[in-house]
Amino acid sequence: MSSAVRIIKKYPNRRLYDTEISSYITIEDVRQLIVDGEDFEVRDAKSGTDITRSVLLQIISEHESDGEPVLSTQLLSQIIRFYGDSMQGFMGNYLERSMQVFLDQQQQFRSQMGGLLGQTPWTMMNQLTERNLEMWKEFQKTMIGGAAPTAKTAERDPPKRGR
Figure (cartoon, helix red, strand yellow):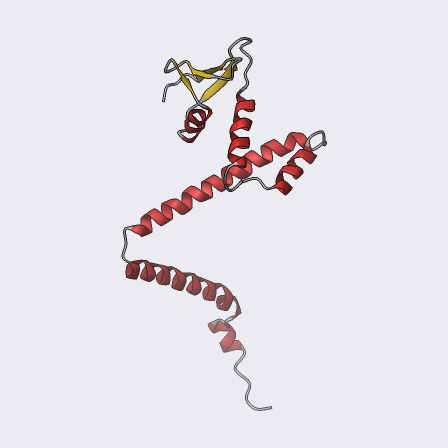
């Protein structure tokens, strides 16, 4: 990746021009730049205004219309309700952090699954069993360790027999 932000110009005829490769591209090409982690800005070719957000919203809208949507009608309605609300400023930041946590967890899950795929089913089962056994032992130490009488307590208070 280059250190400079890639500039894409949008012309009045709705065509997108990628200045880095000196070629016209499609909205799907822009989506692929996002998937590939490229940094870019979309600018109005005439005024130079940054219109990246509107192009990103267009991509979302097109993908929401095709196939299985990510954003439910209820979620979209809830987001719309935040516009003009006193909490509007916090909403975007909250959604960004929530998405980052989700992506981090997804990456961690994929890493763990990738580590398991190279193993035989028996090896995986043995490792899971060992982990569960260790967790159970720790649980027992915590629960029983605090309730079990110590040697000094047992010497001081011998067990009572009968009534």
